[in-house]
Image 1 (tube, rainbow, N blue to C red):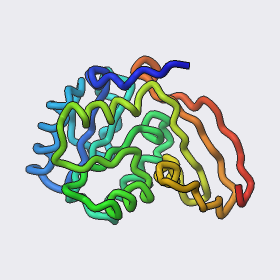
Image 2: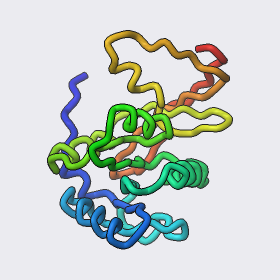
Image 3: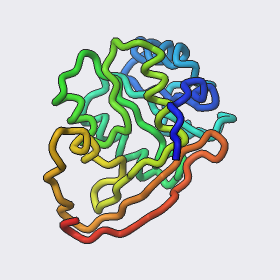
Length: 193
């Protein structure tokens, strides 16, 4: 099967909800979302949801000054919101000149994508567009629901050494601008696999 590269123009059919600590950070991330050509852009509020928007697919863009405790709380609240559109929405962490360890820490928290800024805009848009139209592995445990945290292990030169510590479910999801989020497949995995 031939896979086409992600088309960054697809972001025009998506909503960017910006998460930041203050108005200047919110405005800066909103300007970036505008440059990335999102169809709708707004500051996130837990009461906002995504009802006021005409687009089915929501992205959460998180500013680098949003603290670790706030990041974890945001992810927990979104992933357990009860709405498939929010539970499986791409949550993107923007870091500034981060180390590999800082990027890995955000992946371990459960962010779908971690982008180091400053970076070239077209490259960022292409990476974000990669969240659309492709299958993504999510994992559900007693304490976690989110993208596969071991995905960076698969990029290393050696095979992954980690095994599941508890039974969990593997969910294959696909996001499209036409239908939003769709759970393609769900399978239970016993401990140690």
